[in-house]
Length: 479
Picture: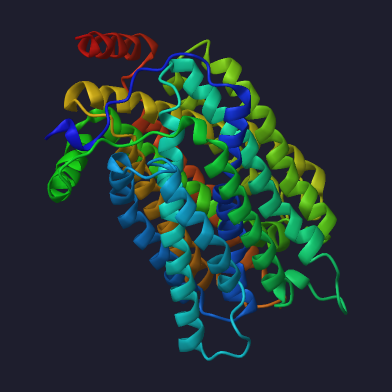
């Protein structure tokens, strides 16, 4: 493979200015907002509000994620070698963020009364369009963060600031709909199970996505980079060869499979969160619902700050495994302690708030440490391949995440239709329905996360090894 198609990045060890970290971090808001709304509301909207069969709704959302996943590595590869005035990463980000907003509004605004085939087609088309724009934005965005610095600890700080800002988007997606778009009850009906608030939510959040993306595009111009001039006709061969090199890397495979399993577990849990709170935990009041969900993000904010401090005093792999183990424990306890006939029973929000606060502390590590670890893998790959390929690496990482997210939503849709047997709308549910929701919400994700722990223990890169790799790279760079 020729290194001519991809720029060789210098090993930048100086601290990244806080202002640049924040402007870069604002670009995470469209990503986390999407994660929250897709995970909590899209499946609920199409299944329980629009009346689309759960399996069809899950398939429609999954199809967009599959297209997104397939595009991710190639978009990353193209951004590695791109030469545009705004920068090789920011130019792709601009295209993506301009399209995300309109497609997100359309996704949550299908005409009422559509027959099943037309409704499914609407979901499929808008989901595919949104996911194409999302991939065009996200992969270059993640790659930009990885190339801001190569310092082992500064990488964690950059990603931690990004995660802190991104939590604003995730918290907004999870809590604001309950306070703004679904806050009033009409004749005792639960408004999140009715149509009116969804188009307004789609418009408001779609505009937010586009605006935050633009801030990040133009706020990071001081760090723009350009791919070197290369033989474009050779790029397709290099793309597939480059993917194969990553797949041959044991540390990449270990982290990729562990992160993918973790993503699968988290999205299954998120997508059933509203069902769990309403039918299993018996929380009906929207203010309590928002406080319960908000406590998770409060814990995550504290957790991200804690991981910045903790990661300097040990190895990322060990803290990653410990945090996932803590999350497994909380999920299993949610199924065993909450609900009718269990210790804390139903309609008691304070145990849920405490549990979510602790879960946020642990879960925040999953937004910080894997991306910092993957940036270390990029150094290892550069030593082996002679190329700096953040775009391909993070494209493949997100390929796994999207496959996991799509699979999780499909699994959740199948669980709702064929295991839980949840009746659509605001109808009363039987006791077996609640019990099965508890199993699906806590036990199923807990098992998947336990497998992720087993996998990550094989990850070999540590502080000393990464330092040795970077020293060898610097030595090779000296003429």
